[in-house]
Length: 351
Image (cartoon, rainbow, N blue to C red):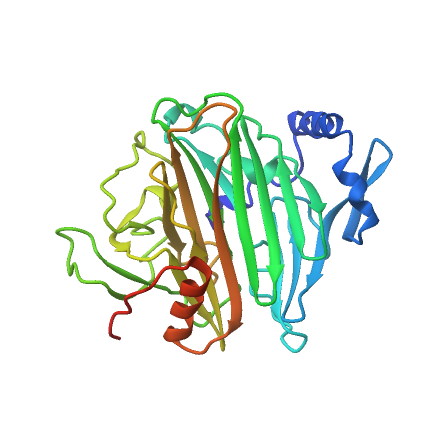
């Protein structure tokens, strides 16, 4: 992830400049007229007379955050990293949870497992234009009409509540570019800023014939990028088809573990970062993913992957998640957070 994530970031190609113009024309800048709310960040252009901003600052009283599109800003944040580019806990904690160059809950990949797409830039969602909309004091949307090759309209919603970020993704195929293997794949990354502990933890078990089948707390760090990197849900017998030499190891590098409940957490000093996911319906599958050095040595990526089967052109699919960042109070608190958010009762294994 890190070795290739900086490639191709020197500027937007002429084709993407055309995409920007088309996006501006489609929207007629009606969404951008929401500039009556206060947005933060550099002005980089004008769309049909409306000023276009690329960042929003939010303060819940507990969290201080910045949501950004794919444009650079400030002295550090690089082009091609969208989502929550800054996340701090309270006025007294100045360290950004996410690597300042990059972001968290970042829309990273669209994929099909089809080798005909391998020559395309694997980070197309980070390179294509986005529209940033702030609909209220705590809600921000990123809209992407499509990428250079992938005909997928994407809508990312970030809603901040005290120490939580409720996240929703909606995707609409505009044409069928995924028919060979029969699924639409999307991938999201959170680049963590030099935590003392690189691991993520979740309640899981070993896959059949791969070890202990009993649910337990699993603390896992992949041995290297793309190796044993992706954890499927317990009971899943689906093996996503990938053509030979599929280039995204964090998707195809399936581990020997499977998760029992769709949440995980990582420790960040005295804080904890918890990712919780809505259980998909029968046509969706959510997988946990992890790189020990996704943003360079000492900077892991705590990620996730979503597969949508039985998709259709012009039919929207979606999934929901929630991220919580707060002072750590132990494993029991993490479990209670998931139970409260999901409504599901957790059978907690002994430590």
